[in-house]
Image 1: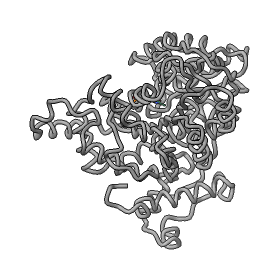
Image 2 (image 1 turned 180 degrees about the horizontal axis):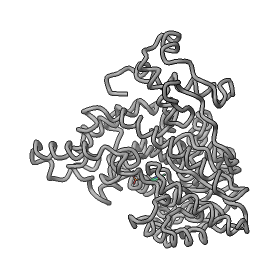
Image 3 (image 1 turned 90 degrees about the vertical axis):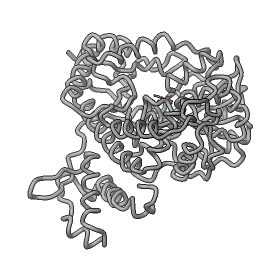
Image 4 (image 1 turned 180 degrees about the vertical axis):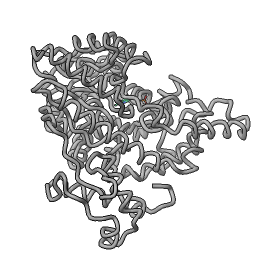
Length: 482
Ligand SMILES: Cc1ncc(COP(=O)(O)O)c(C=O)c1O
């Protein structure tokens, strides 16, 4: 949706696609059924032919329908052997010191080699990003800028960029002004500033289990401790389990990813989000939200941010442009609520401010429009990648393998049958020039040694399909399947 277009108009085709996908979901439209002709549906729904075509193409990108030349659009056969979903996690409910950094370094080294098939890192492939346009905007901003491009900005960042982000906050259900934001060096710095603003060394931070390894490393480096909370691969953190923990343990803060969690891909239902925000407010436990993947939903509407339910400034909302637009720019933000003075001080003490030219270029890119169009294309690509990846896991991995069914983002969490050890599989995969993220890096309590995370950030290709076939074969050997 461009900044000017009203949401209803801009999302008409998405609404139509959602209606049809629901019909497929409930079996009203079955595999092999022909969709109504474009002309007929356009007449029936009172929408333009191009809207119907766009809706059908969207469904095609989501692998739900296929176009047959000269014949029309048909419901595709659903993923054969779709793996069962993993169960809700059950970490030991114990406060733990964190030590994951050495292992994470090994995984990151395996990803850096361009000859390796990149299933290990949750990075959007450069060919899916509008880098050429960003380069042009950056060059023109640099040409036109005055001396302010080459000086320190205030810690809170470049005003026009904060203004653009505040405009986008409406999509997450928030009415915020530019003064509510502090620009950061990526989402990870935003999370780091928040942790430093609300907790000290020795304090306990409640996190989902599994949790993004960058967060675990952060907690490790700040000499804080984690308390891993059971988390559903579908609905996210178990709010009742968290409540029991908060009542029993001294929890200083919670850090959660409500929308398309990494690595589970889970999406908290809106009622759970509200319950979580209320719980933390009641107990005066600051709630740090990582909403990095919120814009990457496969079906509208955009899920709300926890911040949308925040009444007293207890939610610190963090995100960035790293997964959608410019991972290399390292630009993110935090809306720190009532902790703004502490977060601003932490920012001043860490990097003073974020690089001015890059903030200016991003602000100009967003001002020019077209970001929402890019997001739509990106979401379709990720939905397609994950669908194909799920299909490949169902086809090539040993019996008993489970896999998540994310409704957004671009990672798949795979639970292997009992006898497969994720670290051994990781080492063997590297020998075959394939990178994967082994489960144990997502836990401070040594869980998930049967799990791996696969990234669908790269456009689907034969090379990726073959890599998954190889991985399945390697995993099969461990189960005695070969
Ligand atoms: C859940 C989550 N949070 C934070 C980050 C870090 O984001 P950034 O690159 O913007 O610092 C990542 C990166 O993979 C992530 O997956």
